[in-house]
Length: 267
Image (cartoon, one colour):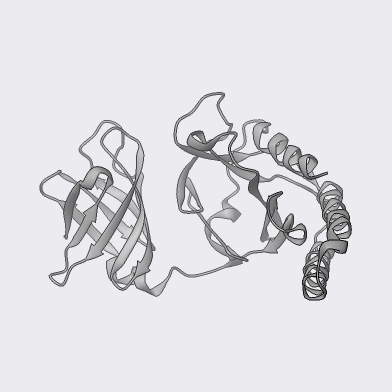
């Protein structure tokens, strides 16, 4: 049963739909459960990974991509819910009273959310990371119903009641901490720059043939007071993890892998 859940997700992710441009209704910052999804006209930022949008997933790719997968019917999602219910029932004899009550509450919560879903066929958005293909037994995809996105998460290694999670997502504003670094930034040393808005930076100057002005080349999220983490594209065209600190003098101090560091100055 558990392996069936994993196979359902694997088939969905691996089988891409025909070439389809992103529906503009997805564009925005969305939050549901413990998931934040940021969608721009060019990228989908999922779990703090920048995934470039492709109308159709290629057979081979580098980095992270986002695209539509094969259509999913509500009945198929309900089948996954029934599998979760069966798993909870199977494990009930090994649960204490508190765990049983918690599982029952979670199952009922998922059931009530699914009841609000239209009896439609949905085009799910998935993200595929070349660096982690085939690893792990958890995953998620996103569907849109009547203007409301939903995150559908499957995880066979979670508790029985968490095998399937289904949460509506609401449009949300960027964290206030990001307001402090909104604006145009430039590196005189490396001769490139970008404009940050809501943690997403669009190139205003380039030092590489691997990215051009107008490309989204950096993503940051707040991690503490004046500290941030995220990803940035390097001169080789690949995204790499970075951290940043807003210094008292107003500059941004960055650190990358192998202790590489540089600063950005406001323009």
